[in-house]
Length: 256
Image (cartoon, rainbow, N blue to C red):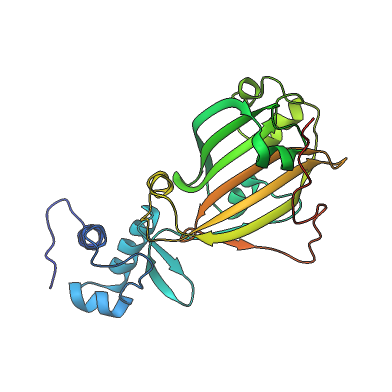
């Protein structure tokens, strides 16, 4: 196939549109390696510069990702997400060259219940704020999180959080100037239909489930969450040595 110049349409744009249509049609599976530059040059009868411009545009659209020394693959660039005692979502994304964002799905005060009460160290009947939302990287969902904070310590959390972009800034309004991750557990599984829909991925594509607990510098729990991450879009980096400040199992729930 030798492309012909069309009035008002550059050759690289023609290449981009053809490849984008083939990706959307499923001719290249997610994660598959795209044909190498020489193969694409021969297919379209264009120069290396034209192919590189087309691939660069596809990458900006999030349809492919280029990995140095390995080639170009279908799907967005994978986020390398560092887990440590001071993990911060927005800072992690910015350091990796992504634009962080979020989308609130729902927010409501609910009784803690057995699991949340155990992790936060509160009675099961005590009210906590349940916040469900999406974490975005360059506008694409990478995380679906259910977060819980104790309302006895953080009253009006929803209103205060609405005025701030990050949990760090929100906690600072309550006098929590710093906090640390005291527990992280990572599991792999397939998503539910709702999780797959919200993350914009197939149900057949695995996800990571992260269970985590944050505490203030006195060791008092302040935030518990369970988050589902797209395994195709994130890789977790756990630097060592890392010594959690809490045991790997939650404390016994308070029932009084």
